[in-house]
Image 1 (tube, rainbow, N blue to C red):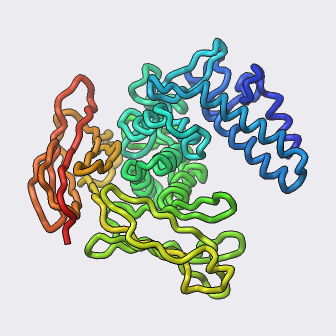
Image 2 (image 1 turned 90 degrees about the vertical axis):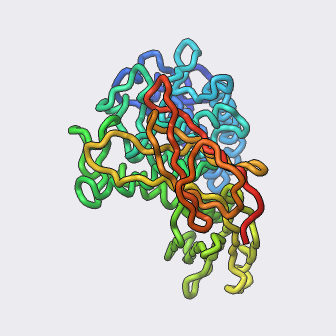
Image 3 (image 1 turned 120 degrees about the horizontal axis):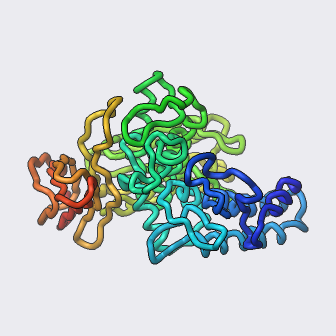
Length: 435
């Protein structure tokens, strides 16, 4: 490990603390116009090294404590350089690469998703929020997954291996970044697409990559690639279930997708312990999260459920200390009352289709207003169902066409605009919570 670390350090050509493609070689891009000779460091290589240097500190704490300060200093320097050189808060973007002349290459790519997911970018940057918007939008996001390069780029080529094709493993990273950034609706659109892809060509298989323009695998694609399948599996476990080790603890931050009444994760293993997670949504919309243990084993997990728009935590019980005390009845759990849920009505994916689904960029509640930022094909009317556990005082940006209890059916017509895809906003003014 020390030899690998020393090699990585040796690839820093300009002394900024980041590995450089000029010495380390390939990272994000193997072919195509993005792989320019003028690229010094791309964002994927910079992000991976920043996290690897920090991990080296963890390893050193086990094997050679005297090396911890060296590794920590390398991680701190790499993180500072990454945030300084790649984040453009004014342009609300994360650059793809730093060029040899010191300037940023501002091509809109999916690659910053890895760094957002892994938390190597500092909090509070407008560049990160802007990149999350891009990951959710139709430039990078096709109905069937994330394109490596945005179709809005002049370099975009839908069948290009590195300049426009849609990759399932990058789709998984995009979902993970969106979950990490508090955009579960946008993240779920990617995960749902990956699940549908497993039944379109070879049944149960995920091909290596798809066209960026039309739903079909490209001719050069490996028809069944484990690398591609990891995008779905990791997206489910680390994003949807929210499985994460943090400061020596197993933490679960599960998101129950729209329209699901329950989710069970059985036989979850961690450090020799095993347990089950169950999430249930009752008729009133209250969501309950509960851990239980397998016989003879106690899984020391912390359940930290995200709060949907308009919801709040009703109750939290149990403790991670219940494992040590041998008290199964004290296992962690929580309940959250109903939030506002937006469910687009959409046809299943079909081979040969172009991208057309309504895209959810972000949904939030601020005071008495629920706001969903959306993007759709211009002049197209989309139908959504909105589960609102509040009285509805007004609706802007859509026309209500049906009402069944808490669930309202709303038609949203995307305005005309200069481009194929146009932003629109649904705003619902809410009153008291329904009983």
